Amino acid sequence: MNKLVFTIITIASAACSGGRSSSGGGMVAAGDGLAAWETVRGVLQHPRCANCHPAGDQPLQGDEGRPHNQNVQRGPAGRGMVGAECTTCHGPANPPASYGAHTPPGVSNGWHMPTPEQPLVFVGVSSGALCAQVKDPAHNGGKDMAALRAHLDDPLVQWGWSPGLGRAPVPTPRAAFLAAWDAWAAAGAPCPAP
Amino acid sequence: MKLDVNGNVHDVDAPPDMPLLWVLRDLLGLTGTKFGCGMAQCGACTVHLDGNPVRACVTPVSTVGARKVATIESLSPDASHPVQRAWIEADVVQCGYCQSGQIMTATALLRRVPEPTDADIDAAMSGNICRCGTYGRVREAIHLAARLQKGGGK
Image (cartoon, rainbow over all chains, first blue to last red; front, side):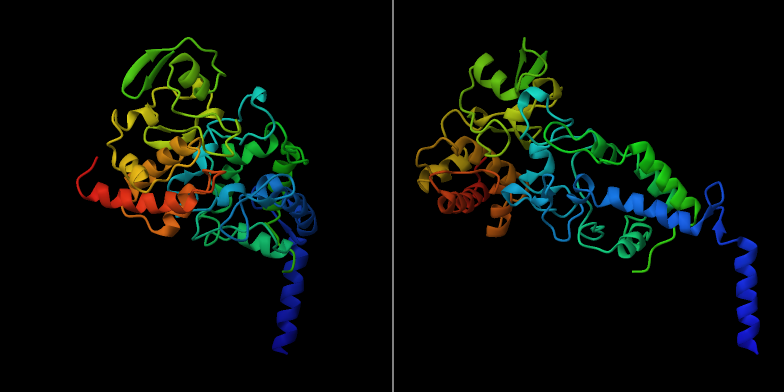
């Protein structure tokens, strides 16, 4: 009997909410949220983003995501090793085109990757695991959904769409990515099954 | 533009996109820093900006700003810097082309890690390529420089 009452309440709740969430703005169905997440996932797992979110401590490089040259390592703060910091080669902006296609790109807030304590791995993880990890403050640098949204405007994130000569930009337009993120968040940031 | 190099402020007339390496070698005559690959892959052009190693070949001079540039010439006028002494004692150099970059990276490492382990040295020095393969002697010399530095060197 208790089980039946619980089931009825659960169905009624779902019917009242329509399976929708209004967090962050307009009502978005959870199914639409999952579709939006798939767009977000495709961006996060593109080499422009994933190369600095590797499974190990060696960043990746290039459109094929090969291990970074020169045995480059994450280092204790995600900014490389003493004497071989990211900024030893990655300057404050992409080099001028006249420097050629094989020079390291740069960014205004200093090239870096996640810390070893919270590496936020994008490479080799399932969509569900990536989704859960991204929105978990214990794994994403202590960010709630608002802080995550603000992080999308970080110069290094924006760099993914302006990576300089010789590197493919993220193919999903940035505006479409942000719209997908907002739709996912408005749907309650649903995640696929792990 | 003004450029502080080795403690001297220079008034440099250079296009903003000119690599710092060009300015150092061609305009200021500081030829100790070498051109290797021109794409930050080899480390031969390593100099310091505010004490941090950077590749001068991919550093547009306009991005240096007020940061202080230090080249191999700044270490000492007479090869008396502990790293230079260690390099001589360990007889590191073979052809020598990469060595000013090796020494500048080693100096930056020793400033922040005065007694580096082999792992510290390997991590710091992996971006400085030596076609002669002097890596073993580079590592030995860095350990020696650490001891010389501790003994009262610069």
